[in-house]
Image 1 (cartoon, rainbow, N blue to C red):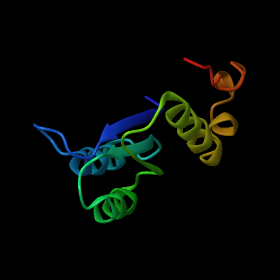
Image 2 (cartoon, rainbow, N blue to C red):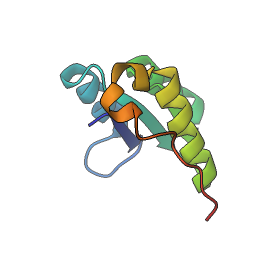
Image 3 (cartoon, rainbow, N blue to C red):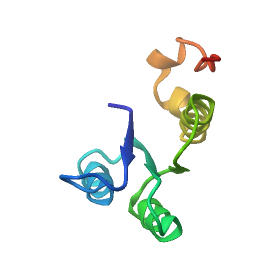
Image 4 (cartoon, rainbow, N blue to C red):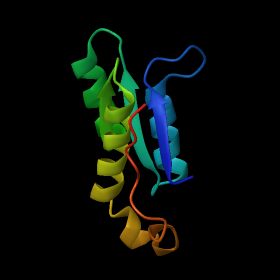
Length: 96
């Protein structure tokens, strides 16, 4: 897995624990966290401190999600570190 998108508030295991566990077990995975719950600033701060490269406030549309994924992959140098996947071309941002 190259990229994980997780919600911060989930019923069985919260996203902050998920981020921490992924960061420990898979240090190179790219992590995007999202939430629509109250007190987002604190939750997003914690998510970033634990290793999420991007945080998204819900609700968001498809374009915002695809843009966040593309920007986060680019910022992480994903193509340079994964040349076999870099030949696939850019992430396409299609209209719904």
